[in-house]
Structures are given as C-alpha cells and as structure tokens.
Image (cartoon, rainbow over all chains, first blue to last red; front, top):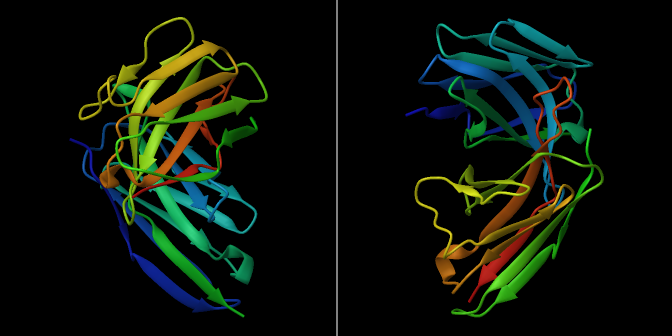
Length: 113
Length: 115
C-alpha cells in the first residue's frame, strides 16, 4: 500500500530565505508526482507535475526533483515571500491507477515578513 | 486548465440529516473525483465519477453513505447521508481534463460541520 510522508509538518522562515520541503513515498512504482499548495477557502492549486521518467521540473522560483528509486521528492522554493505562506502537499499516482492521487499530510509554511 | 466551483462553500448541519454538494466545471471533462479532508488529515479519495456510469468507490466508502450523480460532462453532486460528527470535513471535487496533461484541478472545497 502506497504511503506518502512529508517532512517537516510545519516550517517558519524569514522572507528571502531559500527552503526545501521533503516528500517520501513507500512504493517506487509511481506514474507521476504532483506538488500542490492549499490556501484556506481556495482549494488546491497545482504547482508542478513530474512524470516518473523525469528528474525535475521548474516553474519560476519553484523547483521539484524526483528520485524514484529512493522514493523521494523535494520542492525547492527560492527567495521565499510572505505570499508563499500556505500548506504544501505532494501526491503520487501509482502505475496501476494513474488517476488516483495519494496525498501526504502536508507541510504548513509560514514566511515571515 | 479547468475552473471548478462548488456549492455550498460551507455548511453546518444536524446529526442524521443529509447534504448534497455540487461541483461545476467550466469545460467538459470525462473524469471527476471526490475527496475528503478530515481535520488535520490529508486528502483521501472517496470515489471517481464518470458520466454515464456508476461511480467507483474506494475502500471504506459506500454508495449508501456517499451517493454520487454525474448527469453530464460538466457537473456532479456528492451527497453525505445520515451525517454524524465524524463526517465533519472539507469535501473537494477535482477533474483531470486530459488532453496532454495528467494534472488534476481542484475546486475550492466545501467545509462541512456536523453537530
């Protein structure tokens, strides 16, 4: 059974710092991995999607990496801003059920001005 | 991409009653999904709803408790039946538009509190 874990559960940093969020999964037979941010009352916003054959994806100040063999992904946020404050979720889909997302419990990020 | 709206955004309900949550998408999509996020927990998939067929439920979720309708390619409803306080959660719908992307897009969620 696929399990997804995110560390840390919460993180507080001063504005301008670079930071790394971690995601690990127990079954390496994934189809893809997605990073989302969740804002209160606004649902989830997709940030980056990495296919199982890819190593990383970048969008603006965000960079996500994937090491499928070790069951790990990281989300790197450069030059953090107060607007980055949110809960960040990673989710994987397995090869046998590509539409079903299995979520981690998230990292609550607070960027202090 | 896809823009998704949900109604209601939040509700407070009495034990034993039922609530129907609506999910509307701005484009036609084949697959729609319903998730539950209990307080302090991650999102868990309840069921997959395809137009023209019965919903497929995940382990631990049953049709009698969470009946789903999918009358067309832009709309779905989820009913939470005979509610108890343990049903207090955020319920979210999502879609996978396909067409060269596997990204799922989520609605804003419905925050349900059962007294």
